[in-house]
Length: 165
Image (cartoon, rainbow, N blue to C red; front, side):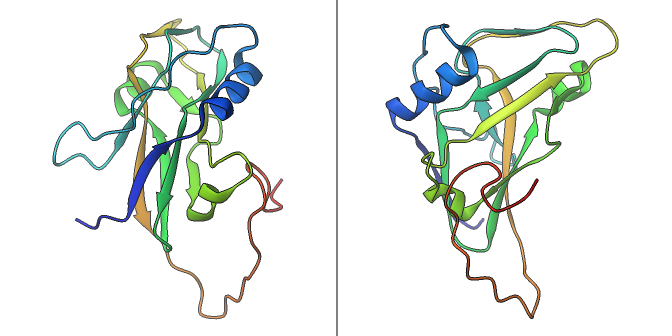
């Protein structure tokens, strides 16, 4: 196994600001534990929900995780819903797969990973999670670039800061 990354907490102030942006007056919870793998053979690191959450069919929520990832160049962290939640509730990430680039760690928002999910099930199932439950998983993967790539731009910001729509 390649040891190419580490998870860290963002500052309490950053977490509180992003929490208040997402949830308004709901009290800011404690930072959740850093993501971990469930077994030695697991590829995914489980991201845990910081508070109890109920998500009815069709509802969407942006979850500040309190987590950032420092990783080696040439690697990316991809975020997916936990398999069981996707299977049982059709829990989906709003951007289908979260892509956390290595330079996101240095962004203006401390590299804070925010995960936006929607309960898209059509069977009228309400999803209930307790604080500390895993709701998403992150997998580190290597990536390549083209032979003629000469990008020198540096990230300055979080979501959408690299010029995408």
